[in-house]
Image (cartoon, rainbow, N blue to C red; front, side, top):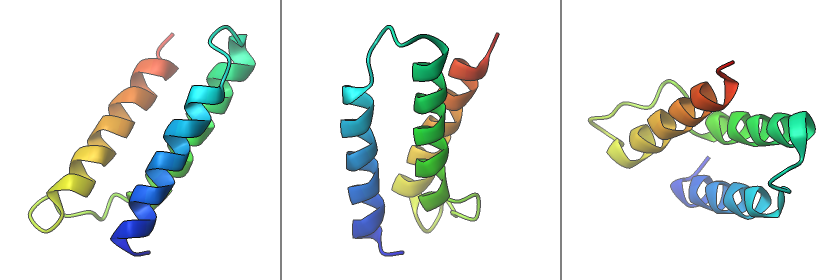
Length: 72
């Protein structure tokens, strides 16, 4: 996947999150977590922060968001 496709995927995820109702309950939360997981697929664990710091930063942010939203 090219870098441009990664950024397009991330922007698309942001638009989808904007459209998710704020008070959608468990369904909205699950939808948000699914979108985060999808974004993580284009920012894989194999990203090397030395070679791709921006991609690494996005991955770390997505993982932190996922953890915060999954916490009981």
